[in-house]
Length: 259
Ligand code: ADP
Image 1 (cartoon, rainbow, N blue to C red):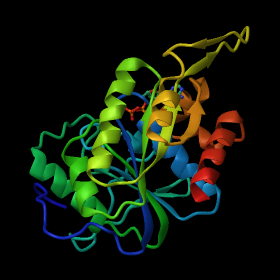
Image 2 (image 1 turned 90 degrees about the vertical axis):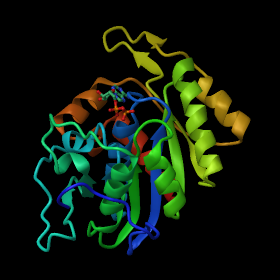
Image 3 (image 1 turned 45 degrees about the vertical axis):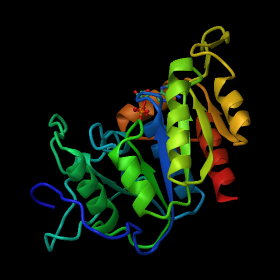
């Protein structure tokens, strides 16, 4: 809790958590955190007990996306009491540090922070713990993949070639770590003009589906570029809380994962 976190020996499976699902991406900025927050909300709305661990240690977005900033309490200086927002139990390294302060840590400290957030946080009884990973294939992915028994991983990508190129590496890393990949999510493919209804594929089309087919994996959702999604993320009220088309899309995604 205080000082610099150091990695400990041992497995990282929080007691009381039935399934841990990691959300990864190759590149940053493709919507991994947006998908994580909305999926967590949609699963909670479907009646599941859901936790969200923001493991994007260098760029934690979840406090902003959930509209929380309170530092989690640690009455005994060891265990950490997570926050609760929009029906989701939440922990982020961003809650422990000022928003404009950078985490300048080497690998062992990153792994120690992950371990604290997995094992020292009082997650309680959860049906699912969503872990919002940092982009890429670094220490956090490696530690989580090796030390936790993950129910699976989901990779988010835009259809753009440069994003897919890195998404393939993330998929390959999960395979190497023997983490089952549940599927891919295509984000920000379609843009529909709110004025004239014209549709454009700003970041290309078909790349995610082609890779999914090549690997024999499902595309779990195709999420368009959507103003409400962006506004909801910035305002701390995920779009999945509402009753529009995006909330429906996330409800469908949650249903697919529950089945
Ligand atoms: P990552 O976690 O992959 O770095 P974020 O979830 O932080 O990406 O998303 C990057 C930016 O794109 C954020 O400003 C977010 O609000 C926005 N964004 C993500 N998905 C969408 C979408 N489907 N439509 C519009 N904006 C989106």
